[in-house]
Image 1 (cartoon, rainbow over the protein chains, first blue to last red):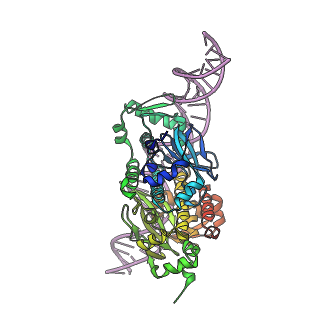
Image 2 (tube, rainbow over the protein chains, first blue to last red):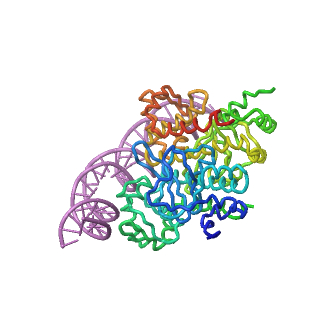
Image 3 (cartoon, rainbow over the protein chains, first blue to last red):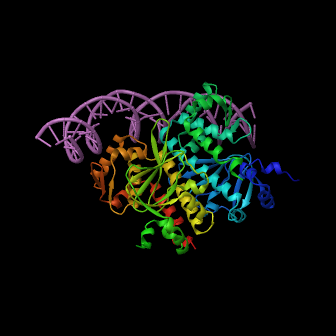
Length: 239
Length: 239
DNA sequence: CGCCCTATGTGCGCTGGCGTACAGAGTACG
DNA sequence: CGTACTCTGTACGCCAGCGCACATAGGGCG
């Protein structure tokens, strides 16, 4: 069954001109990503790149002692595996599925062939990579200067933007791993948000009940990143 | 006077095949960068990209309240202005000269023309951008998990790698701005390093006297980044 | 139903880094 | 040569987040 609108659930695929998308379609393979699944271990070569539809993937930087920090998050607006077309083939970071869902994947070689045509796909992927750069930079600043409270808000909003509903399936333990803080710290911050009536959660399920409230409480980092994504990835730029 | 070896002080230019370098030469303009000079303000379009020779440029993320954090550092191994060829034209970060010295610069349009030939220059710049990604990611983790002591070591080593001598012209105040910490924190950490005999400093001049000592004390972040730069930017990859 | 495992809540002492304030010491410059 | 400014040292209280320990509670599953 031919479903063009299905591809377009991913913003990058959706921004491709018809010609490019048609060329790629035969190679796009739909897969379901499970919570916690690893798409890429540190330093490992990826066989495919992934275009999430309703799934969310976290890029993590893991340290020798095992503690980790999320450096960026990828959802339907992006692609996992930029190192393949950037030429490095591998990266020192891990890619973990943070929210289960579907994605299209493409064999690395197919993507590279398309990329090296130096057409719309290349321009699009490079713009996306720049957005990713901004996200990482802002994450670095946020880690330095902002409280766990604010970072939790940022994280929730970033996730929400990449989901269809308003519920996240995610334990506080996992959030703590993402943010690189203690689980107890997340418990405390989440408790505040719940008391303030912004979210309600229960054993691994978080429901955002007052998104504007979250936005009022989040640090500027969220808006900076969002603005940059909007600027870099809209239809004006893909002639 | 024709001085091919001069260009090659910058690793990226040095890795270019003769043909590409020859094509660019007429457009490469040598400039002297002064300490504290701004090459790019947040959100501003750059007219040129800069290939540092013996100068060092810091990429900073500035926040609304004015406090800032260095997210990456660029020296003779790289180029300032990746957003020009990545397609975004601007970035939300600032580029400030951290150590005075020379650089070659290239008009934005000339670089883009070369980039869109999709030849060795493009591959090289993309590999460099990936290295930059790694540096930012590692900076984010380091900000989260490591002490000011360790971060100061990392910062000193990163700077040292990009200088010819073993002396940095840099006040503790400026270092604090880079690391996004208090000036007093830097004073304290630098004092420890001096007592340990690793560095000696005096009113804006820091001399590294025991580099192996610094390397023994630095966190893993330094090595991760260095390894990735070495891997991505060596002559094997530019066929 | 009862057991166990997982998720969350809470409390405690500790410490690193913050904000602030101020004191000495170099250095530039009139 | 003296003054003004910059750079560095030090001290104090404060607090966010850490590490640890342990208490509850929900849910799955035999």
